[in-house]
Image (cartoon, rainbow, N blue to C red; front, side, top):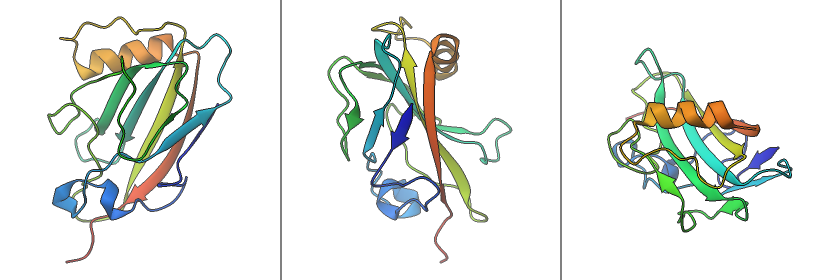
Length: 155
């Protein structure tokens, strides 16, 4: 599989507008496009993860599932297609949460799309984000990722 973004090219620095307001951004979902997925794909899931967050377990910025197999891109700003579902991110709200690391070295943001063999992931609405991520990984038939970085602007 291949995952790309014109807004956030792989190995680039994330532009401010895709970050949280506390970082000076607008929290805009970047465009994402994926291709070369297995023929048996019936849906997709997307995650954005910061492994550098000082939490001991990183920081989950976005968890989206049940994206129809007919969808191969998300435009800048969204929205997700009908039927897609999003979970609470580590900021505590549902949806995309942009970068907002503490002051210091740049953090790495891993954007991943997963190909899934079912039209829906089948997780109940009350499932935690961790349960949803476990179910994604337990069922994924392929995935693609890219990483970009962000550090707080100097004051």
